[in-house]
Length: 99
Image (cartoon, rainbow, N blue to C red; front, side, top):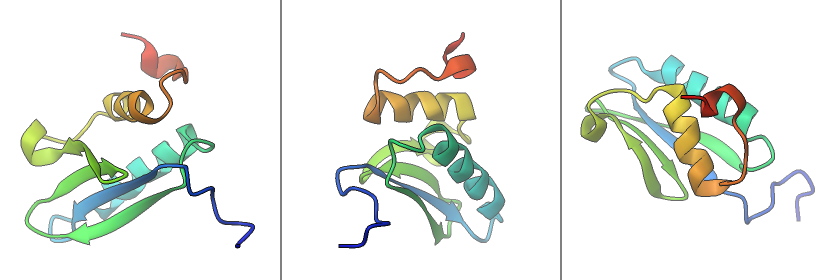
């Protein structure tokens, strides 16, 4: 067993982004923010290149955000709230919890 590997029980987030649309920086920024906020609650955040205007965020294979279905990119506050509600419902998000 790898001592630096995260526990298997922690969730994995995947951000699937369109390379042709040049959304890598947006995906990377969201990954950084999620890892900073949920440093003890996540196993990892992976970036998955794609095409066709895709920008999806999934946690353990379940959809958290889809740019096409939601008609745009997620606000960081909303994405953090959705992820928190899914993986750590009791976690306070500070200013991201304020209306």
